[in-house]
Image 1 (cartoon, rainbow, N blue to C red):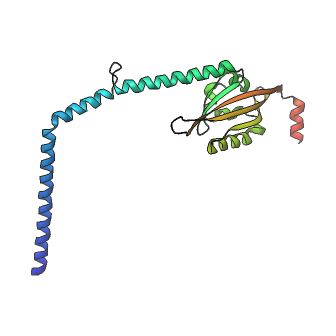
Image 2: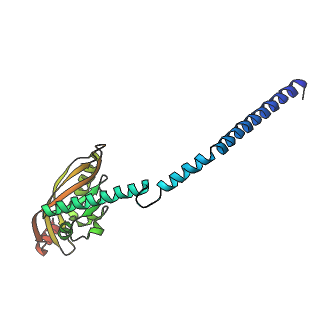
Image 3: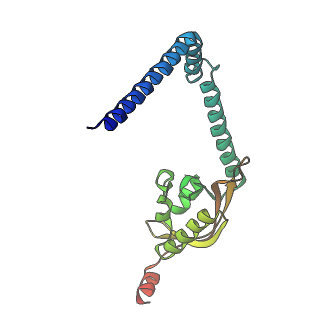
Length: 205
């Protein structure tokens, strides 16, 4: 190693030592600031801890819980109102089209229990010959945020077929105007049982 390389190495070492000294200097100042404001920091931490816990109705967490409870109450009242105003089947879905609620009339029409209808479970109630088209149109409505208006058939496990007219509209957020779900009505137009004669006729076609 020649003299020039030695000088360069010494310079680099000096720079590194200087950087380390600077880091320690800033760290010392930072910890000194922490120690000086420790009481304020601890007080602020206690406030955060208090607000994020349930504290007899006085904390932020309590306020959020009250709002969530109010929202659930409002939703239940809305469903009750619609149920009282119509004898038709009712359903509610998320913005992506997944079902989250069906009323007892919808369940009676389709033969599918409310718990089994959630998500895409409702599609099992659609007549096999109509199912692909209904699902395609429904998902398009969810994708393009438009109304769903279609006539198709439901079929129960014991062969009861119901012709229905289904209409669903997007529900938009008051604040953002974004679609947050869909609310739909199922109107029965005809109910009949698939006979052996009809089944044979379909198979021959």
